[in-house]
Length: 219
Image 1 (cartoon, rainbow, N blue to C red):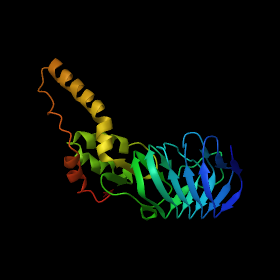
Image 2 (cartoon, one colour):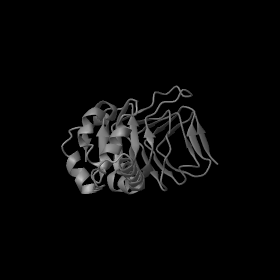
Image 3 (cartoon, one colour):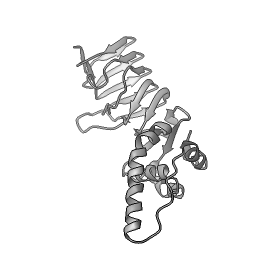
Image 4 (tube, one colour):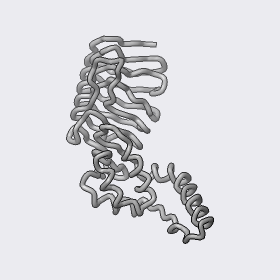
């Protein structure tokens, strides 16, 4: 077990394993960090500058209170939140000039940064910028069941700069939920003597074609 607490670390190659941690206002500069067990080690309240970060296993951590400046990320990230602040840390969290083009990401959110601070992977990844502000406009795509579900997620209050999906993976993940919802709508319509809802059509390519029309969507 190794712990860096309030330390200045520069020009090192660091491998983080179980119970390792970088925290307490540490500053990490021009390092290479390889994380073997993202769920078992701790990164909190730290500034990272010109540092590359690679996760070996899928990561779904928040890394609260961290500021990333000119950093690159590699590996698989699921439901991660980058740039979220913490009341337990005096560092203003955020991102500036960070590169995620070598990362695979799904349902990840970015906070406290600008659009131009993020270099993001392209298709099949889909990034929606300013989701809360654009949620109303996104309703125009709600004839697509998958995009209608994404639109509901966009309405969650908060100051997220962006949210990113791996669209084929997200569709596969959400298909059981969408089919269950369609079955319920069909039963309700039958009970009321109404016409059934339109047949459920789920298509990654169909969703992609609709998303191309929106200037706040990057693919």
